Image (cartoon, rainbow, N blue to C red; front, side, top):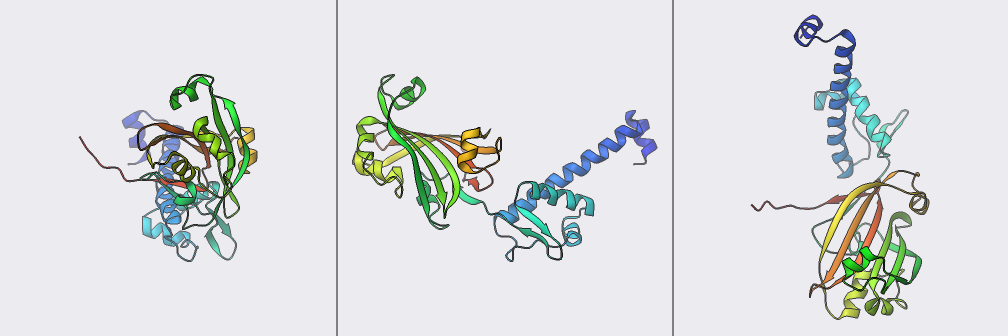
Length: 259
């Protein structure tokens, strides 16, 4: 539509028309970035190098400016980088964390490397009221509090804050928390398997403490997973607040529609 017709149709001035075009270009760049991000994270570029800008433009029917903006978005996320004479290269990997099964982190990522735990704090504390309510214990009763920095092949991945009823938690004080998932230990102590968990997942800005521990920029967005895990008999035994580095983990699951 010619500019004159746009002005007549919507009463738009030249500045507004230009802003509208910039918004459309930004929208297209974001759409293209979403498509490319999926390929980057799922191994769609086996040699680790993305096609040239012209090839991407042809494949996706996008202008060169749109392709450049899309690649800029991926660079800002730390997924790719441009090197002179080489092109745009994948420089970061996100590890898949499934939401279909109840598993510990080491179980979840066993195909991607070794998960180790730095136990930063462990010991009994008086349960804050929200924790006591979730674990169905008396307010102020002692619980075992565990704070762990979890690494995958040495790379900081998550900061886990865990609350466990003390009748089960006491047995964890002498356990190998550095190399063993708490889930496995709880099942052994309780003498029954875990049953299910209720989860909440959201993005939050990292505080100074968690950013420093995770070696992430202060204020960077992290994925916060709140999980209340129950034994097979329904008893709640593990309340966790897990902060994942959002640039190193991707959550996925399978949803079924049931009306």
